[in-house]
Length: 116
Image (cartoon, rainbow, N blue to C red; front, side, top):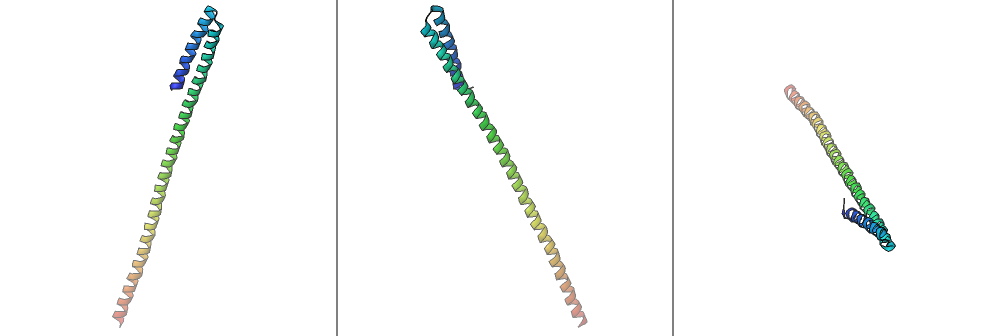
């Protein structure tokens, strides 16, 4: 509930009282003024409800955006981890192959030295 809702409710009550008093004393102008106040109050209350609804939509939109942002950040982090792990695995495999080639070359040199 916001100021527009409260103000609208007050205008409606004041208008109802004015209408009742105007009708009771036979004052059409006062009764009509009361009806006008009630209409004004209904409009203010409706405006207040529209503002409340807009605020709810805004909150939901922000919440959805926050959730999507968190999901994107989580996905991005996961992808970074996968890329890093893949690069590390490739490096390890390459180093194993290179170590194997170096060992083969050492053995080959040792064999050549022994046979010379």
